Length: 241
Length: 300
Figure (cartoon, rainbow over the protein chains, first blue to last red):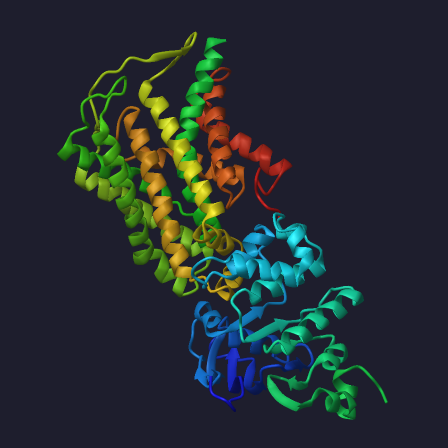
């Protein structure tokens, strides 16, 4: 890894679900290690699609995705994870028919050799999962599922963790807990990129933010500045001044 | 009483064979997400591939009470490997092309019907319509319980089928590759996010499904004869078993298989054999009304 390179560099990304009909029209995003960056914007702005495109799940028709300077734009989804990107989708982010332990094992699919150390580390980081390791994921509460989804994505030691609406549907107390965990992960050296509906709360824990509308960059800047920017606050944070 | 015992014994034998075939059906339904009506032809291919091996090596001298020797067991194993590869080849030739084009599941089903016709008629082209036998040895039925007679071959078949099912269960629950298969059955997108290569799992699924189908085909052929329709004749039973047990569930396919086998044979005690084939569907209707996701199925 070269010093001075921004960890994740997405430039002029064009992507969508159907080839020829992109919903992301040239978005650029940068995330560095130890940083939490949040994408906000109205429904249909293409926030989730940006994450899915980086993960290789939707077709990328233009632009570049670089991780530590390495071009990962054309990698198929199953190879993206080996390049150091962990992704927590918004829905269906755990295998409900598999046990907690099996979910974590599958999360480490690309890791050869014994997983005991990694599994124990995950249980240490997310203590409630340890007690439920033999249970199927469908029996977990919403907060526990989210924990499992994050723990699963961390099994490969990603350098970039992407989360699509990690707090959707969670109780306020659990939302705080999830954000606290993400802060801790960023401090440990991981680059965190998330999409949040809960924009104000998300920006408060973030270092920087991007506002997307209609598949394009609209505003970008330090999270604090976005929270204070009247045009952002009024249109995207639901606050009036 | 002995009639009931005999029907139960026959039902378990039919059930073991149907279960082996139903496992492949349930895997294709859950992992490839379409109803593969060509699966029955893999049973037929397995039976005929074993016939070719037996033609060269002979069925072997009868071993103990069995009508065949180790050569036939070896032939079944070779047939399992080759049928697994054949299933993968059919996928490469037909289904994968459609998958890549994002074909509708119904298109896949019709393609499967087409593949089934081609596969069945290839067998007819090479071997003709007449029945064939692995072995002409006569064997004595053993009296398992008073009035319940079972051929030693049949006991062997049930044992081997159960061993294959237990082996597969251990593979799916203990090995990382098995877990990846189950993960892929639940959510291909999330499986990819975890770094699982879809095509790799698809290939493995065909090989396992084909291998088990070959065992089922050889077992049907042993009791007592092989003809080009042995697979087709059990096609609907295989689907009934897979759906009865719950799509995607191995224990479900096994339970479904035995229930279908028992329903067919127990019905003979009360109604005319002409209705035997309808029994699995009566059972299927009942289950679908009470528990639409099948016995072991997960509610989605």
